[in-house]
Every structure is written in structure tokens, then in C-alpha cells.
Length: 470
Image (cartoon, rainbow, N blue to C red; front, side):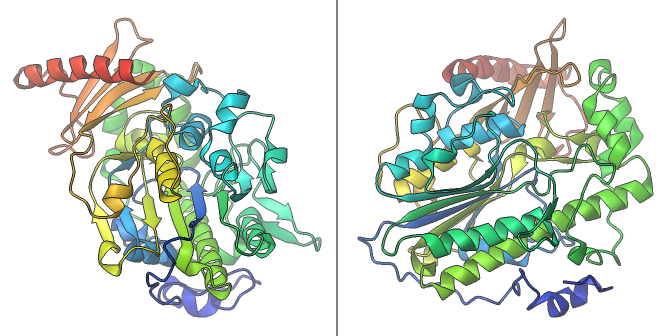
């Protein structure tokens, strides 16, 4: 489609009917619970790269254009307190596949492959062994020897793919749109009557690291957000970065990348709008997939899961990237849509603390399969069914990726407090934040005498949670 000069309010009218895109909010009817109970559900798992929890209209973002994601939230269950246990793509993706903390699966870098035992116990291989047709599309993200031969349909990509691709017809295409084409191809290829699980792993909205343009979006989205001035976050003020300890400020990858993306007002607007456009591109693919499911008569028995592999700093605390245990880095969107549920159990928001390691157990339980004991996550099925039951009150965070520009960190997050520690520092540097009174994590309360007892409890519980993560 040839890019046009269009504003956000006219975007829907202009983009509807364009090749590769579908109209958005309101384009699909509400799905009813029409699947037969004896049928095993299909699954489509959508994983975005670096999409933080609030890069979503349904999360209250008044600017970003995500109508299909918002509709999915209205029709499914939106988990508003979803987190990753490690905020870096290779480790987080391994945790999603296996339902395990990194301390158990041991994948801390980009070159380590799954062992054969681990591969057999990923959610998709467990489904395959029970008769599912399994497909994978996009950035695999774990190791360098990809398991292409283990899938019925494989369009996986090693490493960090480039956004600008050449289509089969020789024309320039954006990677996100190509992944959408491949999703439709998978749906067309699946045997009739056989359940399927398709995992789609987007590069978007991750930057193109080696390219000075960084956020390379589809040119068709160029004019989207062009008439909007995006507010700068409070913690982008230099005093917040200057208040960080020296080891976080000096030789910092997070700061270096901030300088590349956010260091001037013009760069900030350009980068955030590019980030938002990349998310919108994924949203349009979601719309295409749902439209195809409906056309094929599969919409009533296909569970859709949407989440991100980690969050992303958009200049908060004077940083870019992720890695650290701050909210912007570790909190992600999570929406689960199961059309088989009664309508009264859908369209809800759940505030329980849920994790990326919960996704594999949830998929397996929804498929009627046992959850392996080695999985440390917890199935979210009871929450999908609106059951009232005791839930986790805290979780352990870890980031031990070895890089001299990213100091290792670990911690414990509760509903009220967040305790972070940096074990490579001598002495160990600690932070304590009040997540309720200080949601932007601006004041380190580690020296606050009034919270001394809280700190003691957090340190003790941290040790217990860390031991349990092995």
C-alpha cells in the first residue's frame, strides 16, 4: 500500500481494505461459547518483543492505536499485573517455553540451546506428542541451533531478523506483515479436524540495534501519531538518572542506548512514535488472524494468548532497553481469550500477580494435558474461570546475564514492595521501593528506619524465593 498523509482519526477509514491489514475495533462480532466440550482447543500464542504493559489501549494508554488487542481484552481476560521473571529476550523466551525460572533451565545467553530433554518438555512439543499440529513463526530467540525439524510448520528465524525484507514477489515488505502472511499460510495448511498450536514470535517493537533509525516501522503507518505530541515521563528528568548509583550510570548500555533514542525532545518523539507504530503493526496482524479464524469456522474453538517477552524503558530513569527490575522493564501485557468460556467469564480484568512462567502450564491445562512437575509456573485456568482462590503474593526476579555494561540483579516483588539487589557490587547495592506510594520508583527506601522491619522481611523472603527457584 502506498503511504498516505493521514491522521490518527482517519487511519481506520484509510487502512481498511489495504493489502495485509484488517479493519479494527468492532470489525468482528463477539464470539459465543460455541465449541463442543469434547473438542481439544486450538491455540495461537502471540509473543511481542519489548512490549511493555502500558503499550496497549486496553491498559489505559490514550495514544497508542491497538484496537484488535483492545477487543481481545474486552472479549477475554486481561491480566493487569503480569511480569517476567527475567527481563531479556533469550532467557524470558526459554522461561515461557518451559514454565521455569532461569535458575532451573540455565539459559542465560543467546547461544545456549535447549537440551534434548528440555526441548521435549516445551509446551509446543508436549502438545505435539498428544496429536497437535504445531507451527512456529518468527524470532525463536533461544540458542543458535533451531529445532526446525521438530515442527510441522516452521518459519522460525535465528538471531535478530531485519524489519525490511523482500517478499516472494520481489517487492519490499515489512517483517511484521510477512509474519502475518505466514500465519494465514499455517491456518490454510492445518489438517481438518486436527487441533493446532501456532506460536508467532514478533520482532516488533524491538529496535533494529545496528541501524541508526532504530524503530523501523512499516511505511504504511508513517502518518499514524504524526499529529500527536507524546508526553515525556516524569522520571525522564535528568535528576532521576543522576540519582542512580555510579555503577548504573557509568559504562551503562541502558544510558548509551538512551542517548541514541531519547536524548533530545525530537528524538524522544520520533522513537516513541516509531515504537508505537511497530506495536500497531502487530495489532493489525492480530486482526487478520482473527478474521481468518472466523472465515474458516475455527474462531469458536481457538484460544488466543497475547503477551510480551519483557518490558522496555521509554526514557524512564534516563534509560533505554530493559534488564533492570524496574516496572517499565519487567511488566508486560497478558491477555487470554478462550471463546469456549461463558460470556459472563470473559471481558474481565484480573489484578493477580501472574508471570511468564505461568503461560506453558496454562496452555497445557486448557488442552487437558498434565503439567510436568518440573514446571514452576502456575496454570491461570482458575483465574480464567473467575474462581476465587489464594494466589501468589510475591515473585522472584533474576537477571544474571553476563555483560560488563549490564550489572547483574535479582530481587523480590510483592504487591506493596520491591526489593532489588546487585550482587556483583562490593558491598552489594540494595534498593527498596514502595510500589503503592511510589509507583514510579523514584525514592530508594533502603535507609528508611521506619521500614527497617519490612526490609528484614523482604531480605529473608528473598533468600527463600531464590532457593525455591532452583
